[in-house]
Length: 157
Figure (cartoon, one colour):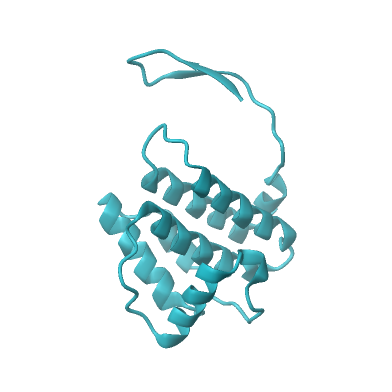
């Protein structure tokens, strides 16, 4: 990507951009599209403007790869959204002590130890670790002092 940004200006001129790997196939699924919107919104809210954050970039890349590999499985959005939210909050340094069910703590501990691709296979649904997902959403909203617009859409899937 080549871009130019003048001092004291917010506007940036994008000169050229090369797409290395596409996630456009995921947009064929409404569920995956909402999940991608969630990832984008959380990233936009938690990262400071114009900050290059390699760890967050690697988190995004691994979750996107997970979703691309499992694009035929609609339930793959749940571990992806949870894994991303958990790590995004942790990388932002705003992860409070987890006050959730024991099963959700077990899932969180596994997510801290293993890459998303290596998680223990389980049946994922909206109810799986929902308390943890809601807890993380509240942590993000408290940190950013605004409600996430994609969360209600994600919760209706």
